[in-house]
Length: 175
Image (tube, rainbow, N blue to C red; front, side, top):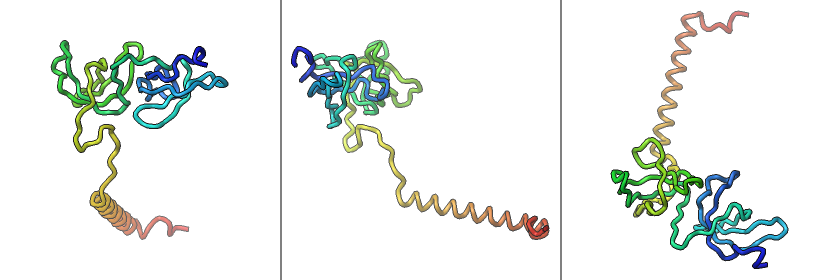
């Protein structure tokens, strides 16, 4: 089986995925090979998700090559041509397989910038989360929104009532 499935045990990078492009560039470990489907079973890292992929969608990761999860926070370093970006932080938006670079949405910059993994490091967030997740409204904000909505609806009801009295208690009375 080893001759037919040489990637078992290897750390790999996922690439050229069409149905799940958000995980292109992700790192995983090849656990096994399913001869019936002709696909490798890969455990994504970090995490425990298992996914079956063709060999064409796997690239053996070079030793020491860093990979980043999509939507993870990173910090830029070591740029010479764009030294103004060194120390800036952003969000990993996509992986460009052709250019072998991550598209990073730098905070305060409109367009994503293509950067090599060697010029990125995981942002030290302390207590903040490394992967962006939406924040839900607090109870106070929900109460404020409800109060504003109620006041608006009452205001509309008063306008409707005054319009009805201007036109003889409403149009519906004409039968």
